[in-house]
Image (cartoon, rainbow, N blue to C red; front, side, top):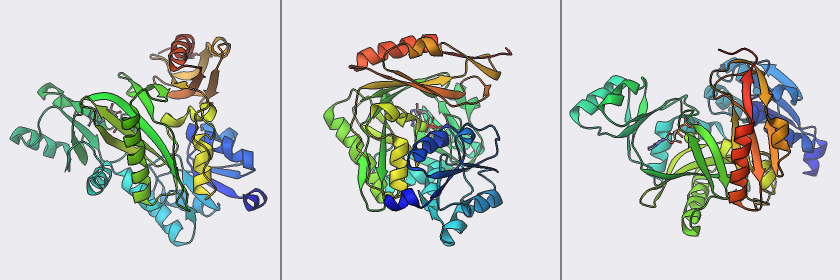
Length: 388
Ligand SMILES: Nc1ncnc2c1ncn2[C@@H]1O[C@H](COP(=O)(O)OP(=O)(O)OP(=O)(O)O)[C@@H](O)[C@H]1O
Ligand SMILES: [Mg+2]
């Protein structure tokens, strides 16, 4: 740590969205110089980064040249040119999490195989090459309704996922190499953020519950801690620890779970980076997920994950029917409510359901935090000066 504070460490982050911005906010506490790579000159992190480099996360040259500028390279999204990361690693660049782990997680098919190979419960699945292969399998009865189709690569925020309940939904099928999963009867969606450093120290954050907006397919409300039994919570925490240890990973890993209607805990998917389901940690937990990611990547002692206060987190999403230069309403009124902490990502353009910020609401009880969160949801509106 002493060395870190005097070494003028250069941390590279691919790319500069809100997760990158919050990572930089924490890195700046330790005087770390932050470099970001992003094609968007108006990306959220640019205003707080020490250095901005224009370039695409998918472009070999851009990623490779960027990696050579920094001492430690990390990322805030999965969709990155892996070949460039592998070459950088071969040449001695410190990359955390490792390119091999990112490569596995980038592909939902490989992820599912990893769970199966390591006896981590997940819904049953088969891999298919294309939409037509899926249709043939449906026709022959090899795939039965209801099922969920996920593109192996490139999906996020529910894009790349199709829930097929019956024959009428077949028009929703996506084209491309995909995973076909059994549809889980979901009681609750849960998440555990876990961190591990090079020394092998592992720390989990408490289990949170995610409530989804069915229209946007985005987290609508996050509840920390989740209201589940001690036994179920232990199971989720143990699976998250087992996964990060089996991967031999350095950094932060978010593991999404389903609690099904039979009471079983199954893994849905994972992300090797700070995650939407850990945003509340900024204020309501002793160490934020962003600081923890830095501690894990830099092999520093991991920080306490103890809850300071129960909290609810809500995403601030662009309103339906509004696209263009952003205009916020209700921020000041919300801020007047005790325990309300507002984060605005600084995106200049709003679009329907675009993540524009988030709010953490802390209160003595979850019930009170929920009630305040509902008030904040009514108050905050993200509109555009130009209406569609
Ligand atoms: N096997 C399943 N059974 C039932 N519902 C599912 C299943 N898989 C996914 N879903 C639903 O679809 C949502 C999105 O799926 P998933 O998390 O795999 O995709 P994603 O695009 O990576 O999402 P995100 O980026 O928001 O985490 C889940 O949160 C869940 O509500
Ligand atoms: Mg998900």
